[in-house]
Length: 74
Image (cartoon, rainbow, N blue to C red; front, top):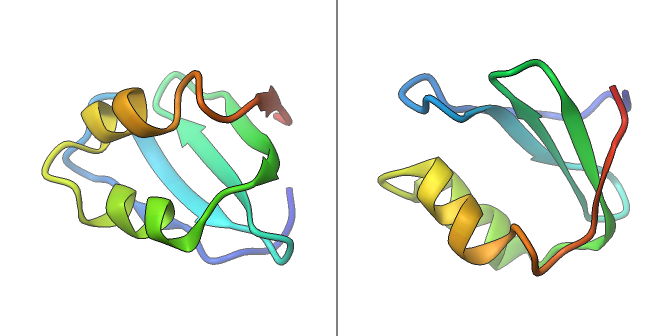
């Protein structure tokens, strides 16, 4: 996995952490242990919204899942 700063979600039962790589692709690590990378860049505003959401899992489901192609990387 690329060396990027990851935002931690200690209160989330779904997400462990997330970050943007140098090309703007979203990296998401789930509590279940799998890590995914978006196939295309994700706008900074979407990433910022994920980081500031009251529920990271709900934000992910509403704004990222199904809108960006995610591929497992680990």
